[in-house]
Length: 268
Image (cartoon, rainbow, N blue to C red; front, side, top):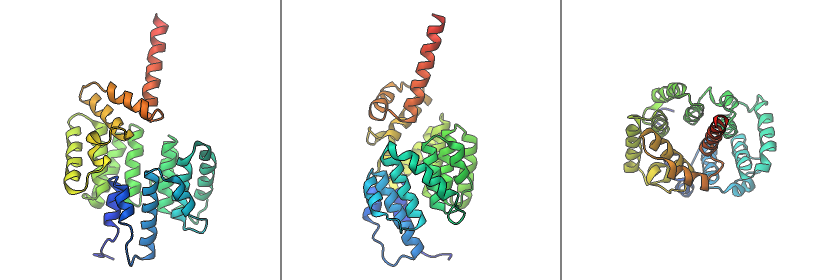
């Protein structure tokens, strides 16, 4: 219904901006419709996952819960332990093959997220590329950037801008794209985060470079920003290697170093 109040606006915003505890703390909202209550619960459990509280999510969502919550539980299972990955992906594929639930937006979002983690980007896009929600469009931007296809990421961003230019996810996607493109665009990304910092409470995601130096995405962004600005990135890369050895940037860097070493040895 046009003009109806968006009861979940603040909760969604807190989640998008990385204020996960604030999202959880402000989730006790009265008089929600069944659909809004379901979205609220999905956001709260995704916030717990972002905070690393996988077991809480796994224990609280039982087999009678609705499909979106079951999907969120699958993400918690997937992230909680490497031993769970194979069985979780198997369950996920079964659900995606069920035409009764395969089009559920949260299930598609979780599928896209899990396959992105697996670096199976084509499989991720199979489920996310049709869009339908701002979350799915934002996930598409992330997937295309991981594929080094900023041209496709820009197309997704344009779709988001046509839907709602001021939406928090549209602004975030614009900042991600600017950071990936680099050069003068880094300043534009900085201004977006600066604008967030003036409007909303500080979070690690907003502060980025000035934030918790152990945050893997902060460190990864600092590495990328330093390289684009022609500055040394070795300190940030070292921190990332020590604190998050499995991060994709560390793996790529190590692979490049190994190839370089082999190339030198072959001509020595």
